[in-house]
Image (tube, rainbow, N blue to C red):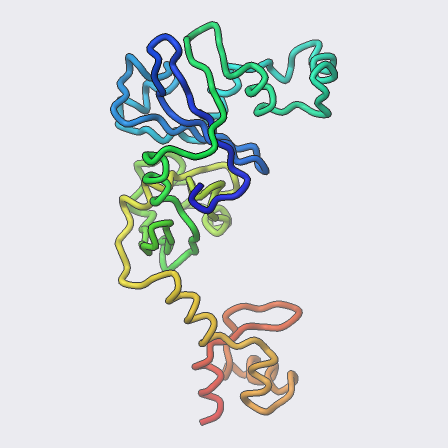
Length: 271
């Protein structure tokens, strides 16, 4: 499953036309759902809820819409006798995935059902190669993004304002700083309230001629902690604090347990 743990895969099957229309992925720990529709579906043979995405050529459905599709096919959490239903199924708490498995994803509104599979289809694996594996804020309003295909891309958020929520991200420093990789690498999420699809970041990012391992090597070989800095300069922590206060040494990250410094900054103090 492309190296992603705790992910379950379900075939979305159209019983009337005897064909698979997509795959439902569930990331168990966070109970996040992602629907991957098969290429070539149109608004007539795709689930009705996804028609607006199909018309735009989008086949990877956002998590909130995927969850909504799941909820349409199960007993609602606000059902009056939900505690009795939970007890009958020996469930300690409400669980969308458990109820989906119990109902097999069947709904009176269409002919679809779901069935657990052991592997994900090749078309899903291909799309997952464009999922995020890491990201960090760069200069200006940009992010450096790492993808599952090993590419590294710089994304200028100022050029993505046509996507809902990006204007809020750009205009709020705390929101911008909260950016991180979302579940399964399917999206970048900001304060867990605004999501940007990974495929948009992949498509719009400028490829950088470096790899993730280059960044890891840089950190490993060019970043000193406080103990390493003490050893390199043969001085005490108090001496280092003095150098910092005098502006002769600038920490790149500060922490009560110790700071991090660029190797080049440390070595300058030996000259």
